[in-house]
Image (tube, each protein chain N blue to C red):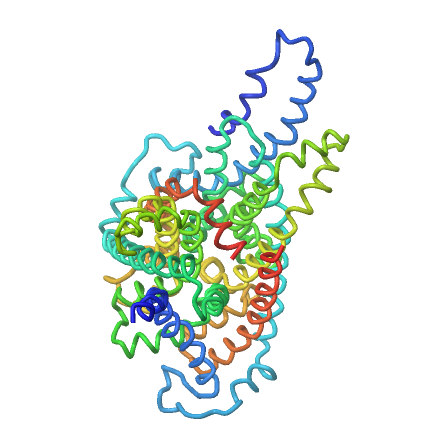
Length: 288
Length: 295
């Protein structure tokens, strides 16, 4: 009896978490699958009913915005992750050195991590608006960078970099701190210069951290809706609409739950691929 | 300001009476190029947007000077009283604090189970926690809206507390189990041998040593909840239930000509997270790496 009670302890401890996850994460995923086969639009309740694969047919064969959003999602994630990896690695290497004021420098460069997507939008609108922004100091006084097809992509990428690089740097800094200092000393004794120490000591040890940070951040940028929703609203001409942003707009603005759910299923397929990759890699990391 | 702090050491401590170390000045120049120049540039990139927001918030409308003087608080009065940030702020604090408490308590329970017990289903639980990190709130807006409508929680801050807690939980549990594992089991065991129950041993011996973990997990939960925009936008449509991010998004839309109000609203939104960040940033590197990278 006593041993039965003791065996029940861990299950009791995790039960609230399991219940919450089941009710508000697992069940909703199941219901998305169900809705995706339905006509369901809050603004047109009389037309609700079973739709079969109609939503998917519309999505795959008639909805150009779906394919366009997939294309932009890929472009967005690749650009963001590539630049965040480069800048984040550089930043992590810099603040890993010892110098006076390092603690303060770290807090300052990491601080945008705590800023929300909406607040980032608010701040960068002030910077980008013609006449009031900072671009007039760079000789571009009249360009509305967010409304122009040529400039909107670099503008949103830079904005997200401001908020995204710190987290990448934090993840990589944690990896850097796990490298034993003796390795650098040994390499220096062997006559390895700065560049060779970086290539042969730092990079190999940082590999796992880089792979996992890249993967985590890719998923995060894929899912990132707040910033684009408020900064560009997916425009101009829908060129900055990612798939999750498209889903959110369907849910929030047009209340078309059936079709939005079909779009969500497409997103899940992509995320599932990333999750499996992540699980494989994180288990791979544990064994070593 | 901080670039001064960063640049000073190389010059201030230039070796003068140690003739043996001649190459030092040359190394210093390399260090300036390698370290302080890029760091200074990056600091400019990081800090100018913050500075710009503060400038807009404290200078009178119509002024375009980059250095505001004299400063005014009229924009703060506008957003706080007229636009209703006093209410948004109160709502955000309510949601943030309840979600922080719920997340922390549940994370301690779940983390303790993961760290101290080897039970059947443990690895399945871990896998579920890892995978749910990947589920975006934006994709679940539709079903969650339906659930909260059934529960009668639309336009109720309760829906935000529940939803934010659920999305904070997976990472928090993993983080907390890492912090609990760092407290050696032997101290707890010793207390139990002395006659404490498991719960009393935990409260008396483990909990006091868990302070960094509690601060880290609580702060992450608060920051995420404070910043969450889409749930509040979807589940709440009455203005007296708006949270700060929703209020800010309306300020962006409706007051797009009034940059003073937008900037002052931004400062109101930033102050609490900046304060929490100042507390938590010491644990950022260890905390995040324990949870997110190692799993």
